[in-house]
Image (cartoon, rainbow, N blue to C red; front, side):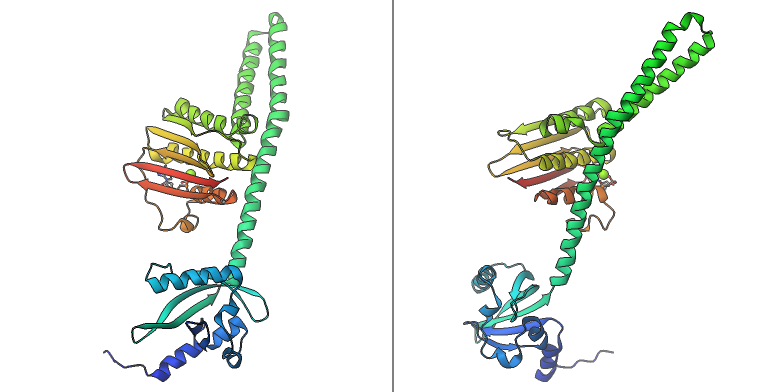
Length: 347
Ligand SMILES: Nc1ncnc2c1ncn2[C@@H]1O[C@H](COP(=O)(O)OP(=O)(O)O)[C@@H](O)[C@H]1O
Ligand SMILES: [Mg+2]
């Protein structure tokens, strides 16, 4: 059973007054005409003070520019992304971050003012920023730790194993005539075990922190990774530099390398691709890394922010790393065609 009813002016007033989002209206000159209780709470201006308040008092110089832009677009009927983020200066001078939507008030076909709905997201934003900071610290700490472990494997464990192999060699060769055949066999068996262990260890150290990135830099490291992919997995992989190569900060080099490494690992593990292309493009004011494959592609999540929540931690990690260097990561993938990962870093 459907019951139809009409809301009266009073009902609307009630909704307006009691909404948890701040709402207010001002005329073309910015004079406040109305506001609800949530607006009072957000701005610090009471309804009595409201009469003499101008909307521009809520804005600082920088935020005024955005407000003007919103106004201009609305008046011209241009597209405006809503809700948008804005910063407010409250009566006591504090800054609040709000997510707000604005629309023109039209009376008799004429724009007479603007109405706004805003939600205070200051705490949420701060929490988010703290989390980001934390994730960044963890990512950095992880790189440091990897470097330390790789160095230890390289400088301490590897030489000990090498020494062990050399000793085994000396024993087997110098004492050979006096040793029973079975013991020689056993010693040789031990030797090849030790060689295998050493090789495994070196691979592990390389994976943790390829020396090439510290010694020869990003371009060499990308070429090396592509060569390995071709050599070990038969994927036709190439790394290429476009533009005039320029020295990038160490952290940028390392994180771009990590992103390429992860993207190529995905190509190898998931794409069933026959080819992969890595391009590092040095532009005037930006550097762009592209990793592309011709594999089977996959369905991307609706939003990049959803990556971690749907368990795509590798892709989420790439995005995290891109943001650490103020870069922007874009994923493109088409079923049956392939996948492209692009990172654009400002310089
Ligand atoms: N280059 C690619 N080609 C095909 N599928 C891919 C590619 N990269 C990622 N994927 C898909 O996206 C998923 C998530 O990738 P990722 O976050 O790196 O996690 P993981 O590699 O641990 O599975 C993969 O499991 C795979 O299904
Ligand atoms: Mg992965």
